[in-house]
Amino acid sequence: MSAESKPSSLEAVIAAFAFVVSFAFAYGYWKLATRQNEQDARIEQQRVEVQRSMLQLQMDMDARRAADNFELQLISLVAPHLAKLREPGREAVASQRIVAAAADLLSARGRPGLQQMMEKIRERGAPGETPDPQTKAGPPVAAKPPSSPWIVLLATLPGSDLRAAEGVANDKLRAAKDLGMIPLVRVYKTKLKGRYVVALGKPAERSDALAAAAQARERNLSADAFAEPDDGWVLTGTAPFPVEIRSASAE
View 1 (cartoon, helix red, strand yellow):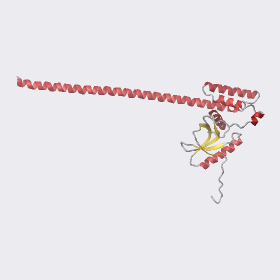
View 2: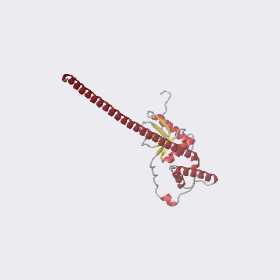
View 3: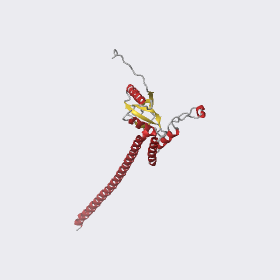
View 4: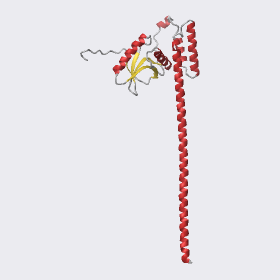
């Protein structure tokens, strides 16, 4: 009886050990699976939050781009009427009402650029108005530089060909003079990409630059004219630039 009980006790110990090991493995697997599920849930939640943030950012960018395009289109439409803000007559009054309505619409959308431009034009006084003697005798007042200067770009060229940029600037200057526009064309070099850009006029406020770009497109000075913030670009020169003349023998 004792000889038979010993194997039975050993078998019971082995069975109990096997059960404990099996339970430990099962518990470890369950714990690992639970932790993995929790980690997957956190990753999925982070992915959803990132996707939601990207979608919101895209929506904000689209809304801002649409607002910019609307402002640019509206300024382009009223640009021909800006010159009549200081003129008398029925036709001028109609133009003034059109500009005022467009300015009010943009101001209601948080874009007061056209309103500010209209007020500046009116502050300059009526055409033909002469300053009083005190104004004539007073010292010249320096023009206040724009708080956030913008530049009207007429053309963009590679940064390796300054001659080509100067040639385009000369052509744009002649065209601007023929069209009765700003007789000032400059060449800048950008910092980031190192390109040459041909610009119309001096750096100005955003609203003025947008209006000048719209006028340049309307009068076919440059079909791709647009305004862009001045990012500290380097001024390389002002048109007219000297033209290199080559003789037939040199060719």
